[in-house]
Image (cartoon, rainbow, N blue to C red):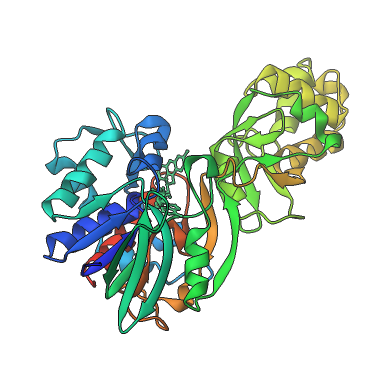
Amino acid sequence: MTQYDAIVLGAGAAGLFCAATAGQRGRRVLLLDHAAEAGKKIVISGGGRCNFTNVHTAPDRYLSSNPHFAKSALSRYTAADFLALVESYGIAWHEKTLGQLFCDGSARQIVAMLLEECAKGAVDVRCGAALGDIDHADGLYRVQYGDTGGDTVASAPALVIATGGPSIPKMGATGFAYDLARKFGLKIVQPRPALVPLTLPGDEALFRELSGVSTEIVARCGKAAFREAALFTHRGLSGPAILQISSYWKRGDTVTAQFLPDRADGWLRELKRERPRLSFRKALGDGLPDRLAEALCERLALEGELGALTDKALGAAEARLARWPFLPDGSEGFAKAEVTAGGIDTAELSSKTMEAKRAPGLYAIGEAVDVTGWLGGYNFQWAWASARAAGLAI
Ligand code: FDA
């Protein structure tokens, strides 16, 4: 049995950064992952360019049962800190939109950087390591691992759960973090798919026929609102605005879309006075893709010249276009979810170190924890910040 100072489970974003941080502090660290290579989700993230952080990172851009939990870690390791690391490796980057920072080149540069950081800390990185039994006795966590799960045993006084959430199982994602946390008595906040396309029921077939059409909207659900592009799909709704709002959506909730979000109140009635001969269909078509304008006209059951339509009918159309209701019947689930909301209950963890209060030496970081960021680099920033907090504590 080999003894380490810490064993980190999961060589994704959080596990790699935590292991590197602890290793560079002189800790002997073993980093285990069942996948053949480290950081697989990083490689495919941001369309292959990794949206590695967001300059607008702030605690209110995260969902959690305890909205205050993320504050401490996020304030102690910021987007600027991670950017400084990226720059120290000469990795070229750019800001795309809404504060999102991407690599100019490949996301693989971020994985290579993290592996190099691990090497600097002499971290023992073992990929392709299936995990077997894990137990705790006499102040040590013992982990069995190997090709078949149990050939080798390692022990350490600290064990870090960094195996992420179950989103995109075909990439090797599992609910392992929750099983292990439960084994040590920690509570789990019901995991659910987030940043995920929403599906529409059959009576919304009109919209499903618009598959491929995209337009800028303000998507709203409860108090949450996001102004970004929405995309109609053959199953329902996607695009950044919908992915964002999906994290706030629960079954039975209505999501509203504000089409033509720059139009002021009363715009159709004003247009009627200015251009009474303009058709209603053309009025909508100026600013919306043709097929969408057509579908909306059909649903609104209004046609003909604006001058022939009553102010009341036009006012009602304006109101509907500003809050077009969709009642999704579900989401595309973990198979398509970019992240998992819910997870290891933050009430179980120290917000400063990520250590479990009722299981000393056990830590949980990254997506495994009930902290979920908006779309746009926020989830990686949480991975880095929570990993740093644990890496400095073990
Ligand atoms: P992560 O999932 O990265 O790592 C977990 C590791 O644990 C994996 O290496 C896995 O193999 C391993 N593991 C799991 N179960 C195991 C088991 N039973 N035994 C051993 N090992 C196990 N975020 C963002 O901020 N910007 C972006 O651009 C994107 N883009 C993006 C695209 C796509 C397609 C997806 C699916 C996700 C994103 N994300 C994102 C989200 C981001 O990838 C995610 O939040 C982080 O990778 C979470 O980091 P973790 O280290 O917590 O988990």
